[in-house]
Length: 139
Image (cartoon, rainbow, N blue to C red; front, side, top):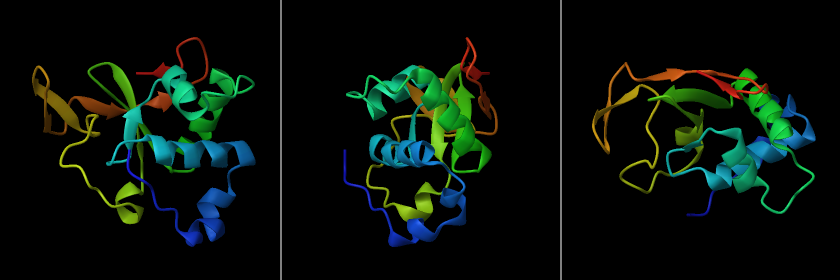
């Protein structure tokens, strides 16, 4: 995983200022765990295990609530493709250099054209709502 750049302007971002300390930490840890296109698996259990592998006090529910807030302020887009949840950091391309030719995850609006192959279309991947109930991602 390549290094990420966090610009000093993040300290004066009105959007980031809307977050509490935990939500902000989740946002920073998402930055260093997503692929080169700002995307990753959107399942809260996976996100919790990747962002906080050593913090047993952090719960899947608290991560899910932070994701809800990040989506509400417009920093994260939650979407589903072929029934699987994913997330995308919304302003990724403005702040990071894309090094890889291909994302590890489908883009919002991507639909599988053949097993294992992705193509971009307006169908297939749709925005979803984040929820912290028994089914954390409503598709």
